[in-house]
Image (tube, rainbow, N blue to C red; front, side, top):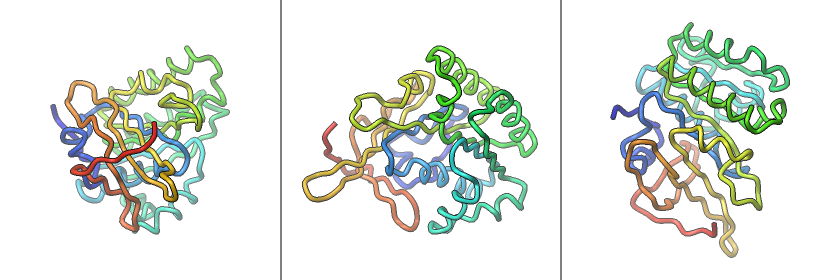
Length: 229
């Protein structure tokens, strides 16, 4: 199985070698776990280190906000855009009708191989019916596969619930599911990451600690984390 490097130290090891090429991965977790940081690292370093192209579709944050926040990690998305190998799309989830056409057009224009959708939770503002939402996410995954993209989709875990995503359908459509935890352990907070599934591939079934530093996210595959779940 051909793999795509996540560009996150330690992540490929716990995924069995990286994200399977042309698959759709779900990144999920509560607020503050670093979901957007994960996606930006996957995107920026994939373009810089492997000379790929990518499209980042945001339904929530403005592009200027994301670009400014990621500068602390040394990631210059403005410079990537000027090379013609990166495209940032900010789209209003209340006007969703033609978003797939716009996404496909941008992917084809720059021959993108990496795609981020941040976050799929915003679609629920427009699509209230669970079956319709699931079909929309499935249709999105089919478009991305057709275009030979390896994609990362963001959802969120609602605090106090046991589900893996906001609507409970995202994890069933995705090929891979990566869960980020940020839990209080006595007087401190602990970060942990788990690969919930990777379709067609073995992977670590343990919880592993991770950190967010000025260089981005680092996963520690040789260590095991302990949190309440």
